Image (cartoon, rainbow, N blue to C red; front, side, top):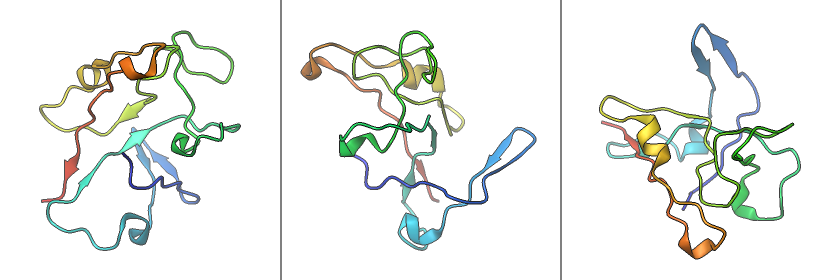
Length: 120
């Protein structure tokens, strides 16, 4: 379960192939300590979210692209609604994100396990 949704408000920029998103330390809990783990994900922002507080205003990825919707996912719940993720050597993003089972019956969903990147 997520600890917090962080929405960067200002200062997002692009330099070459790099997206720079400044995040205040206090949004992350203060100074980093050894052993802290982070997941850095690029998601679509939902302008008209459901009332579900867990949605964090994340736009769903559907099986086929539509106006205002990304394609490549599944039309049931359970697929990761992730467009891109920060990974590291030894982690294959495609393999990580494709290990899910999405089903019309919520209890049959199997979720992708997104690895943390740890502070050393």
